[in-house]
Image (cartoon, rainbow, N blue to C red; front, side, top):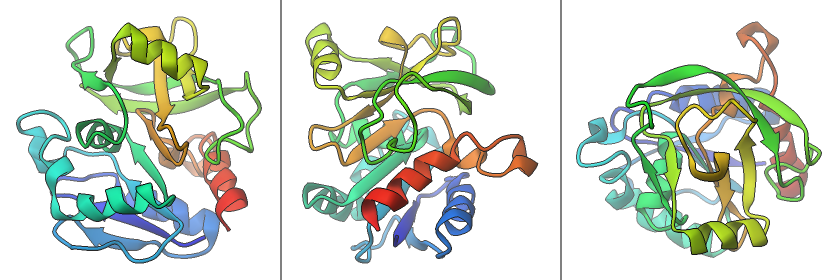
Length: 222
């Protein structure tokens, strides 16, 4: 599986994503600068976590209009898989590639800790190695992870099976509506999630809960 990681100014999880991808796929991902015009032909594009453009205006707002995002959108429309993690999720909503918005955490504090999540959708290319109902423990690290959308959009996400991950009962760290932690686009080839699967891909880092997400992608994209 060929992959690329987009690097924005102030990305701080791009190397984490690259390390996880190389370790699991056996191939080094291409690191693509935000000012580049095109992403090479790959199977997966990762928009990593961090504080792109210093989180000025709104988290992800400036990154959504960077040069490289034009090609990311075009490739997503053509069916290329796109994974947006934390700030990457924020960028995807700001770019209109996913519905809704990520607001300030309900407690108005930056939250950094492991949380339990429920796998709601196991038939996506991102979660095929999990089973519906599985509990997976992934870390979160964000100040603006409170997912918001109008009721019609939320009902549509529910009805179309596009809510992939929810925070387990009592585990919601940010006040997200309906405990949403990760959603798919209509074509089901773009996933945005606030937790960090790339940070738990090695026992030495405290767990391997994120490995099966990347293994799912290998199985469906290779």
